[in-house]
Image (cartoon, rainbow over all chains, first blue to last red; front, top):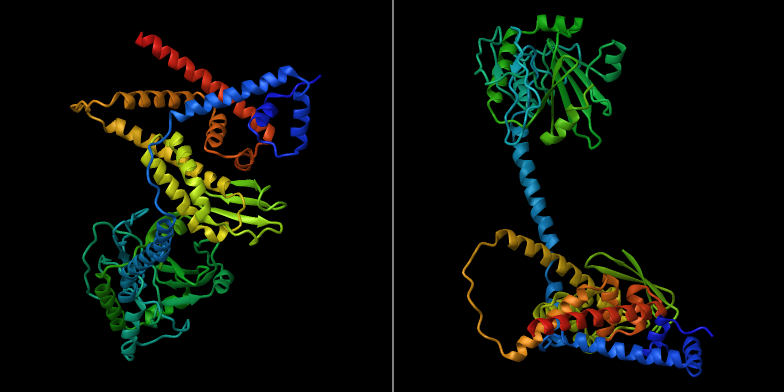
Length: 328
Length: 210
């Protein structure tokens, strides 16, 4: 005769089986015929009672429980308040807006200017770390301003005073102090503690003499190889005497600019530079120097294949650093 | 963490799958039971609170904290009332929430003790006022129970405390996923071990006292 196992016996002794449960009926039938299992049931009950007695020694002191209505009132009070994370979300949004405004004010006030042959120091913004610093000796050439004028069209800034205002508008992104003398302009700039490559121009509102704008296709057709971030499309390439700027667009419409100094002078650039009026160049340089003293948004400088490249854009410094690492 | 709560009593034929994060429990109904059995939480509160406090006390060994945790358990149930209407086995649900809170409480206590140990400096110890003899004896026995429970495995201890808190085998099955027979086996083993360890320690103490 097979006996009842301990688990079923304990469950039976504890009254765990519902009335008329098949297992309970089976066990009951067995117990009526098995003295051994009946004794085991009694022992299980004694063990249960002893365990309950021991656990009873560890009983908390009586404390009056709050009424259910008080508990409900507490729930309603806590649910009336906005969740803390909502307040935190608002605070985070406001802080982010203030931060963007702070960093963006430099771009609004001081759009950068594209100059060839000028050595500009990368700005020091709190928390920004330059990945590389490279000293570049400026050639004694006046700095032209990159404009949105049609390539090949020469614009006389002296005859068009609106161009000065446009040039100022154009210098929105970043400005750096001008290092070294700009020949022909007679303008001296305060030397920075360390030199760095040429920053990128952010806008090209002002027409100027010695800059040529090429689309990506045109640059490719002319076999002009420029460094770029492979994942991003090239919007255009601006080539001035001694300085090239590659403009690439991000998925959200923002633009990053890779600027480097190089003697990439096309024939048309050379012609236009020679014919650019000297006063226009001097005005451009002076305006640039004036703007350069203002605080700027961060940019990042890297060296890729022997070229010193400065990347700028309306992005946090960390994002610029990450993009700079991808330049090929 | 997913767990399956079987509802044999109030709403037969339905099954629930609860997705539990540490403190937020969302109960999804499957079957035909949704919305049919509304939970009277005031009744659950009245019939469960004392048992819950006793259960939690054996977990945290602090009466005040046990009451706090019990209230916190019901606050969470009430806050999540929209999701817990008709949950069926409210006792099992409440005890599950309480168990999670107690587990987290225990971890917090361990971290706090470690922190205090590092910070503790030698300070003058002021002797506490003498306690009545009954209180001393009760405290001694309670300490033995605490030590005896620590000798059980976590599963055995949990099942034993749930049973002692008035949970039925069906409640325990809902919380642990064990069958009726398996619960019986676990309880049998846990009780034997508890009695054995307690009686041994009690005997040792009597011998020590001479």
